[in-house]
Length: 114
Ligand SMILES: [Zn+2]
Image 1: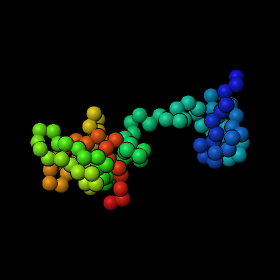
Image 2: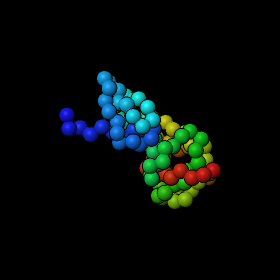
Image 3: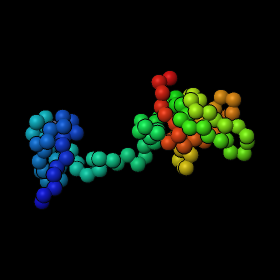
Image 4: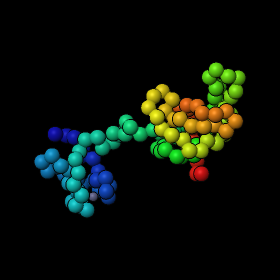
């Protein structure tokens, strides 16, 4: 076994060792299940810069977006309050001022403080 064990998720110590199915940190005593440590965030929706988005967040649009079936455009910088995360290609459901209910893609928005 030449695998390098991952550092402790609690204190980032590199002196972790394996005990049965668990990894153990001698520095802080934390024990955890290895595997899926890096990126098991398939259910998480992230914005264009990697922030995790949640229901109710406020975002701004980072790219001009044409509204399907109309001549309107959602302009860069448009602030959208109270987003709702949904499953699918357009993973954000929201109401855009002056336009109405529509779906956005998370990669075209950025989370901002409300
Ligand atoms: Zn530790």
